[in-house]
Structures are given as structure tokens and as C-alpha cells.
Amino acid sequence: MKPKVIVYKKVDPKILEFVQQTCEVVYFEELDSNTYPAFFQELVNADGILGSRLKVYADLLDKAPQLKIVSNMSVGYDNLDIAALTARGVMATNTPEVLNDTVADTIMGLILASARRIPELDQWVRAGQWKSELKEQWYGVDVHHKVLGIIGMGGVGTTVAKRAHCGFDMEILYHNRSRNMAAEEKYGATYCSMEELLKNSDFVCLLTPLTPETENLIGKREFGLMKKSAIFINASRGKTVDEEELIKALQTGEIAGAGLDVFVQEPINMDNPLLSMKNVVTLPHIGSATYETRFQMAMTAATNLVSGLKGDTPANLIK
Image 1 (cartoon, rainbow, N blue to C red):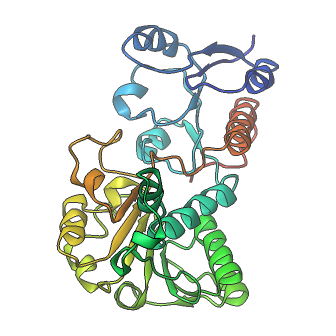
Image 2: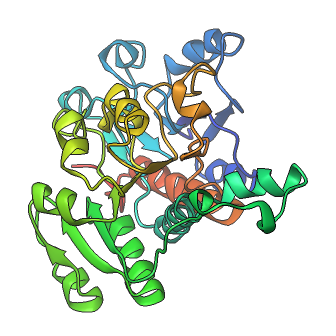
């Protein structure tokens, strides 16, 4: 008998076909109030689940006594209670590396859009105005030859460092749990304390996973240490930043601007002050959202799932 799995996110039919070669598949394009009852009914005798963002904590695991593997279709896994999964002998996997280039492209886009005020000037042109009416206060700032501080020098951080150093001649500072010797050797990155990074960077890019240790990692003190001309980029998770303090720092001119792909509450509330600030560029958490990369993420997640159910150790087992 084939193991039973639930795919709870819309994926390419080729992904479903791959999983169906080994497993019985129950497919939900999305989970909402209409599909949750059927999902939980199927979960009772499911051997594996594949998707993203579903909170897999002890209460959900109580409803899934046969579960053997949870395959997360993302790099981050703050939606998983790893301790609870481990205690029950349930494997958990994610999809690292696959999206490094695509997310790095998004981050460089946020840096450029924020520095050169591209969204503002797009609206300027659409309003019938031209550069002859453009005053100096609308000018942007250079990106090339500036200092980029990267907090979290993992796969994505290293890929950003490559683009910034090789493409824009930027000086790279970084803070990480451990030294990244490859980034130092290839891209001239300098390992330093968080305080040094914040004081000396023209662009501060936050790329840490969300853990109890990194929640509200950047707050009032950290914004106070940054240059007044600094631009803050967050492509990690919304809760790694004290959003109220970010808003204050932007409103008071403690920092010059921000480029944000993530927020504390998603979708963001329409009354959030960040949405009315001209010095903030916002994206709807789409760092990895290209067809090619999402397909590869789904295939990696599917391969992890099938591998685990066959009795093998998945390539991307979270330990």
C-alpha cells in the first residue's frame, strides 16, 4: 500500500505526478475555512504533508498519529515546532540553497529601488512631471562603492555579497553566528560585531531566520546606532524587527529609508504607517517568487518527502 500524503499548497502538476509515483496524494490548492475540515479529516491517517506556512505544533501533531515527515516548501521553518516533531519521531525538511539567487536578486532590487527612489519617481512620471521639475531633495544616493552590512551570512547572504561586491564594488561587512571564510576570501567580506556593522554600514540587510533569539533583533538601540543616511533592508521575517521602532526611526529621520519584503503581520494592515511613507519600498513577501524557483522549491520539497517515506534520510533534513 502506498503511503498517504497531503499536499496543501498549489503546485505544478508535474510535482503531483512525481509524488503520485510513490504515494497516494490528497491535494488542497490552499487551506482556508472551507478546506480545513477536510484537511484535518485526511490528516488522521496521513504519513506525510507537503506545503508551507502551516503551523505544525503539538496540537496539530495530536491530530496526525501516523505522521512520519513534514516537508516545508521554504527555507524558513519558524512555522514548525522542531522539538515537538523530534519528540514524536517525525522528520522535518526544508528547501535551502534552491532560492539563493532569486532572493538575492530581490534584495538587490530593494537596495536599488530604495537608494534611487525608483517607486517615487515612477509615480512622478505617471503624474505628468519630468526631471526639469525635480529638486535636489528628490535625488537618490549611490549604491556603488558604499558599505553593505549583512546580518546573517548564510546562502542568501553570501549570494547578496557576491552581487554587491562584484557588481557594485561595495565593501561588505557581516555579522553571523560563525565566520564565513568563503565570503571573506571571494568577496572581501569583513566579519565584525553587530555594533560595528550598524555604525559603519550605508545599507543594513537583515537575513537571519526567525528564532526565539532573533525575534525583535533590530529595535530602538540598533536603529539608534545606524547612520542617519542608512537604508534598512529586511528580507528575513517580519518579527525579527521591532516594527514600531522601525516606524519611529523612519518618521524621525533616525534612518533614511527602508526596503521591506516582510512584515510583522502579513498581509500588512492597510493602516500601517509604513505604507504611507515615501522613503519605504514595500513588497508582498515575494523574495523567491519566480516560476522557475518556486518549481524547484516544490520539487526539492517533494523529493525530500518521497525520500523520507522510502526510509532514506532526506537531503534537507532539519536537525
